[in-house]
Image (tube, rainbow, N blue to C red; front, side):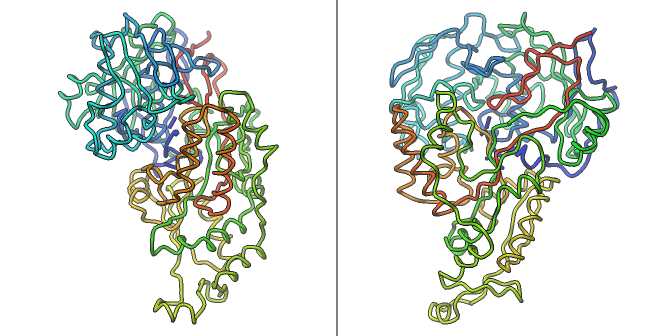
Length: 566
């Protein structure tokens, strides 16, 4: 669920922490209290206004968190993080086909029956080039999806059929060992066609413009201030839902403000940063930690004319970076781990610790780090370091021969206007100036503007992170595919695409991991991205709140089966 930008999903960036620069005040009509036993209600705070609750277009984790509570796919994750039945009561799987049988009692929040046609409609919309869905690439394993997304086939040729209201048949382009897990992702949620078309561009923008088929529904929404989720009585498993209401009483980007709200018993859950961790410990609060599953990294812009399109500069920055120091001294949040590759250690790929064990037996190429090694990369490819003027210049004769200026302009580092985002950007600004004599201009933006600039390639470096959509290396590996719209750096490498295709198409674990190891080698050699850290979370939870689940996949936290003790 859903890079900075989505998996996974996608560009929410719990790593960057928050996105809005100001406190969004609670609605005057709400009097927040963290938990209420009699009413079985809880109050929480979001880091931002959800940018989009259209499951066919959304990319960020705040939106996917909300959609994961108000909508449900064919399968979902249970309390132990295992795939469990959702709208589908059963399914059968062959190498290239999955047949789902939907529940007879699946309903929308207006009481209308939910049918297999609702999935067909939604998935066709996602693959339609006119929709411009940022997550369309996640559906490429479906037969004809790639050709449809390229505009070569009509959406009606997508490999999904509904022979009747309760049967959904999914035909795959090739064997896919991870495709059942894909069905839990928000992009695969159903959408009722008649309702969607009646809302037009306003779909998902207001409570009355969004239908729920999950455990909760949105009953009130004061934009950039508050939101109310109430139990959905039409949910097929409503009897198992204890909470009657989830009040999103605050939306604020301020870590300190959220900590104070928790301390004052106004919200039931809060994530902590480096500073608030110390406050929590000083005040004797019970600190909890959780490995969130994300990967923080920096995109390099590979587009023609960008200084970062030169591999030597990227290799120099990689050599100058020390992941251990970054995690321990800059981030300093429990749960974070230094990253050497783009593929985090927790990945299982269907077998517990399988990738971790393989990685131990086949370690990635050594990265020779340190200031001296970083300067060697520059010197070895006709770059010289002019630290006195803080400019990286090319060999004079080389630049003259090519008719190009000999000075590389300052590099632009794009980041979110958040405490963690700025802390990371300022660290790299100082590191690269001191080590390589580079001038770095920090471009901090709101979440919406960050996405806009990242998609246009308006940066040299961009602080980002990706959260996984499903438990497989593909959820990280395909970020660098030439065809993936989430490939913000514009990296194109036919060898990488070929190795990725082998990883995606094979069901043999050994063959798949061998392909992943080759992808890892390419990433370390060419440095299209610079892995920074595996993300973690330190948090506080109201002791009366039970049944809340922290999870890597799906909405996090998940309040579906939460309850309030007396």
